[in-house]
Amino acid sequence: MTMGSTPGREPRVPFQDRRDAGRQLGRRLAPVAGRDVVVLGLPRGGVPVAAEVARAVGAPLDVVLVRKLGLPHRAELAMGAVGEDGVVVVNDDVVRAGRVDGGTFAEVEQRERAELDRRARQLRGDRSRLPLEGRTAVVVDDGVATGATARAACAVARAHGAARVVLAVPVGSPQALREIAPVVDEVVCLESPRRFTAVGQAYGDFRPTADEEVLGLLRRPAPVLPAVTPIPRDDDVVADAGPDGLPGHLTVPGHAGGLVVFAHGSGSGRRSPRNRLVAEVLQRAGLATLLVDLLDPAEETDRRPVFDVTLLAGRLAAVARWVAAEPACTALPRGYFGASAGAAAALVAAAGDGSVRAVVSRGGRPDLAGPALADVRAPTLLVVGGHDQQVLELNREAQTRLGCRNRLAVVPGASHLFEEPGTLQVVAELARDWFATYLAGPGNPGPPARRRADQPAE
Image (cartoon, rainbow, N blue to C red; front, side, top):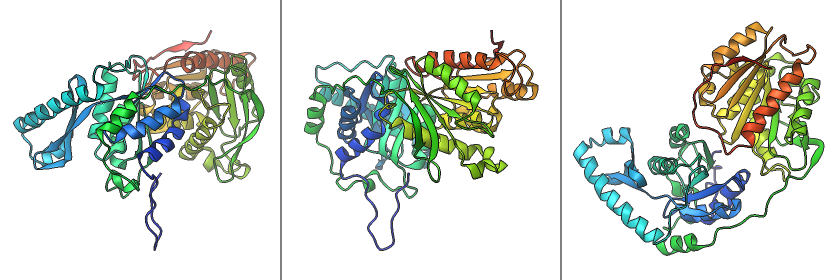
């Protein structure tokens, strides 16, 4: 999302103040509610934003303490940052441009680390740091300019054992966000203007936050959200995506444990008998499903959109955002099931969305995902028919480029469309077991051991 201006009008200011920004950010982060989350605010300005996020998702609030390392003669320009547990982040470009030698850097680091220790005693007092082991850490600041401080904060959260690290900010520099994305599981940013100049440009009121306000927010009892029980549904929907919305069918069983969004292949859609069979198996296992047409009828007749992976991935991501806001699905962890070019779209969409917990590809073309394969973090199952030799080779090659835990399952005797008796049922059961494992688990494993398991399905 970008900020712009209209000729003759004042530029749009998206946030009244930090609390307004936190409320808006909290709405975007609603899907993480109830997932063993700790919200970590960066003092001072990030804490009022984080307090509203914590309230929205029903999570406890703590601070993550880091100190910016400013250039000796331009303190506002970060050449790096330090955090608790000895974490140091260096902005090599600024260090080189400022001609900072090792001794000068060490002197600034020592001074800022002493201040970091003082601030920890001041803000925490006798309160213990909230444990992060195995939990989702949502690191919140009022904005990202260079990214050095946010990067250090995320590294501290990771060092303390967080299973998943999400950076959430109301506004950020596009370059800084691109640079930090590879070192976290997800970046959530509401505004990223092309002409970014400073964090304060997004706020009507950007006055400094006082220590007393920070201390007051940290002393508040942790909010508690009521347990969310998915509302059973089984009806036609229109997802708010595409030129005129995209028709689909949403099924949410009682006590659903996850949601699978289907990305169909060429000549296929929400009424595909193959995907409906798979969806029924998933539903019986307690998983919600959304089958949706990613293309309108006119686009389906034109071969170009059918294989336009960028277009399909963008629409799939928009559909996922829409369904995550539906009351029946808000708290459900999400996965993608893709076929043919739809599998490539699912992988591209997953590469840009750390909240996706698992991907399954049926007879897919993961090679069409290109460089995005290396950025996929969601555990991925590739299912290919044993007689589909060309696609099988493409999947084997793509498997070596995936940046996630993955498996290649070969269904003996199956062709590309799995039309042979019993073979599609095998696909459905493989998908069911994969989603049951990774949608119900504590979170995505980190960048893993790649597996070359051309393992026939049993």
